Length: 195
Ligand SMILES: N[C@@H](CCC(=O)N[C@@H](CS)C(=O)NCC(=O)O)C(=O)O
Image (cartoon, rainbow, N blue to C red; front, top):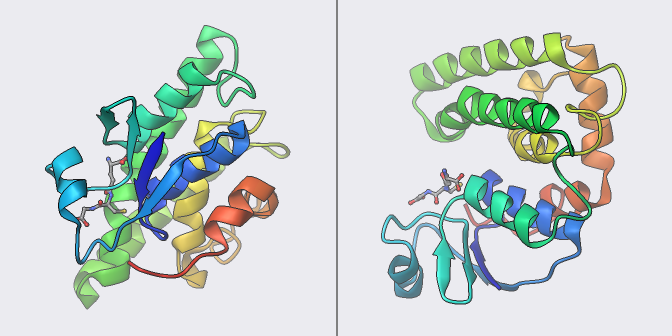
């Protein structure tokens, strides 16, 4: 398998965390998004990362890649075994992705006005997540794709928008547990900054 990714792209980081959890190795192609190689555009004309290439099939989206990895290597599982638990976990994953994902680029690179509005949206999304966050363990019980979705986003937030600064105690404790997990620490804590 080949993975095209950018070090600081949270969606690429999701895939790298899942690969580490499952003990799978890939040939890595690190992309500078400001200077996309033609080979990436051939695989994904939209030019985005991550892209996982398996036996000639290019899978150009982190959610689809995580689903493929779960099918290819079901153990250790990143989804609960029961259908309802799987549905709950996937709903949480989608809520995290749609609640935070669109705001991060604006928070990091937007105008002052965009930053302000993105910050408010992030506070609203994290405050809503706090209501459902567990006292212990991970977001859906055992470590899962929901934690993999949220950890790279939270790790990129400026300190005033991190759960502890916002007075969200359950999410703050979750953050400490999630970022200390070896697969997460290795991916969100290290690496040259390209984007
Ligand atoms: N829905 C995609 C989103 C991926 C995404 O937004 N990737 C960004 C980098 S973090 C990207 O490649 N943007 C295109 C660009 O910068 O041209 C996924 O989940 O994989």
